[in-house]
Length: 311
Image (tube, rainbow, N blue to C red; front, side):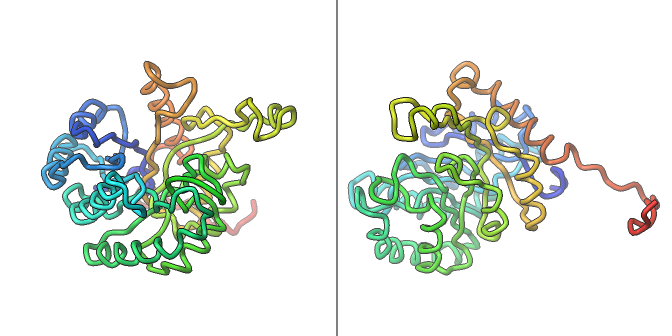
């Protein structure tokens, strides 16, 4: 498979927990998406992932669509029954990623619940060092989404990897080459962090990118602050938020990054429910345009002249 505008594909996430991933793919496969990220929430629900991967590939058929990443979201660091299901789901996803054609599994690190973030590091190092070895044996990379899930440095339920200070600590604990990030600008913007400088520093650790945006309501911040009753930020579908995706994709290209940008929907306060796919298809087209449109192959024999001449 070639092209999609030379190395950066635009796709979307596909809910897989309830066993309808292949059906979900088939329903939207002709809308122009170039990649899909099937993902599970806390559990695979006992699904045969080898068989599911085959059904997803069959749903794609001969379309030029890839599934480079599959997702497993939950808290694998603690020991509730659902946490154990999440951990088992990670192992299943790592072992079966190739059935989807995927080379990356993404999700949350997990966290010791309601404790300051550094207290999770010993458990994080133990678990993810083991899973990194398991993944490396399968040719799989592990990517942590930079989502706080309403947590912060002091307390939270799900994830360590939501802050660049945390990334420094994590990658010191697990310097494995196959551990990185599933990055998106939205989750930095809700911290009022400029995402563009992050790309320049961290793009080598971006194994997958989510297409999600944010609208920062500066008038609310000035009037109420960030901890008042009025929401100071909305998560948005790309094309409706504040991000300049042309700049984001340009910085990714300048850093030599290639891969899929998969839209994470279901968060936009306006384009949701009956308008969900309207918003997602708008985001798809918006991101394709920000990427530079369709790839144009330089015609054979064309000589554009010497770019060093100033004429």
